[in-house]
Image (tube, rainbow, N blue to C red; front, side):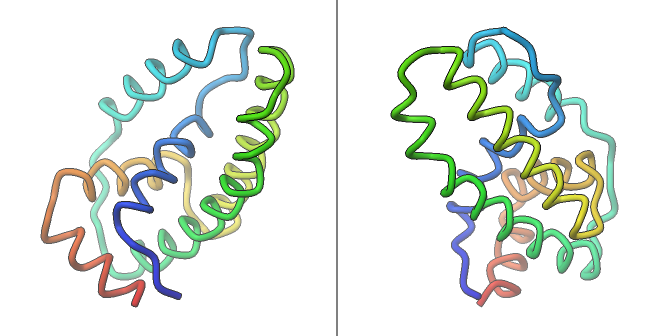
Length: 128
């Protein structure tokens, strides 16, 4: 399985919503909430075992994101878009949990990968 780190980050942006509550708020407001939550992530020790779980979770989250991307883009109204987003979030959260990670751990790894070039390289090597 070869995944590109920029792809990881792109999938992570969509996946960051997995820990936000589903509300009737517009997508832009939910994006702001997701960013705020990422900034408040607890410090998590990034071990090889954690990264291995993350790679599995990331791959599964990316599949869910791809599965719903076209549906979300082609939603006829905000309510339909929100319903699609909610379904995708639920599946992403399940994928993260099934990989043995909590949403906090998953999002903490995402945040660290975005900030740490050495960790990006380490993750890239694990996905090749």
